[in-house]
Image 1 (cartoon, rainbow, N blue to C red):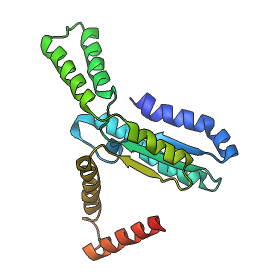
Image 2: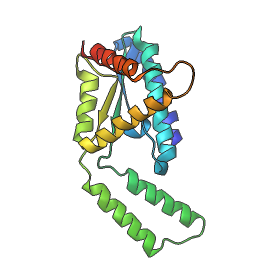
Image 3: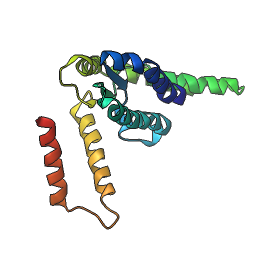
Image 4: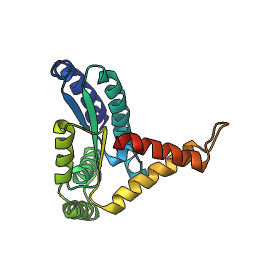
Length: 191
């Protein structure tokens, strides 16, 4: 997971960075809403996608003076093979250890596959990449969720984290000060 999501992204980006800088191009990486929030079932995956967030921010600062724009696309739950592949990897580990895939395990895979196929196709994710790569005003982050509920969960989790960041220490902010900061940040993005 880390070889692909961390080392792979880093190595490919750094390998092509000179060409992107020369052409004043753009870099768009694939993050995930799991890179901004974490659930207990996906700690390693979320960790790798949190790294993408940090890498995107650092790279954007590093390349800004060279007129290279950097974005991260953060999809939510769309149709893919990630869940099925995860179950199949677990099966391979069981078999490598001399175990057998049980009927219950096979049913788990079938349920996972059936669930994955109910999810929306990732067309909105492709549209976000197109915007990031070709629009005159690309965004740094594209949160792309298939439902309002998933977006609300993602944003409300970030708000809770903001509250947690503000809980401890001598330099806390009042609600009014936080709202003023939010208003200012939103006004900056709108201008």
